[in-house]
Length: 224
Image (cartoon, rainbow, N blue to C red; front, side, top):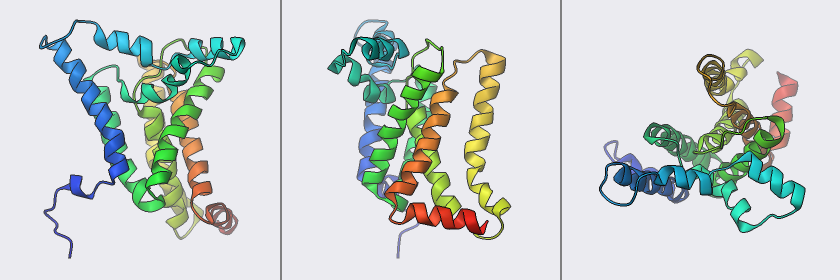
């Protein structure tokens, strides 16, 4: 019988922990520098410039064909660098909670694939569908990819009428509405484009990675 008092960290899949740790370690480094404990000021800005995802960098690489490691690494590194401490907290918590659900439901390798591939897809859509020059930083696109996978699992498990099944998309809907509110009223960057694209990609990828997932999805839609 499982001990209800056992710490949650012990139940987290190893891959989820390995993805989460760099976020914490990098944010800890930034926090130490900003507190004046070591290093020089402005290190967070430097890392965002060097390892954040900048649409202009990808556009230039697409035009020139110069896909060097300094360009490709950004598709992965931007997930672990946040604009501030709160960004790390929110994206980190989403990664832990949704990552555990996805890894337990679809497998740890599926979690890794959905996390990184959704982030890459979201970044590309952000580049080519938005005129935004603001960089992508943080694991929010990847987390939305996990939300897409989460929605797929809930949708395929849900029974009853289609209206009941569509509740599987409530979390995605609420978060997207909040994103649009921040964009419209507070002048936030159009990063919601990357997050929505990542969520759709995560949903589709979950269907492909789950054995028989596409057929299950089609059957649910037909019966709905």
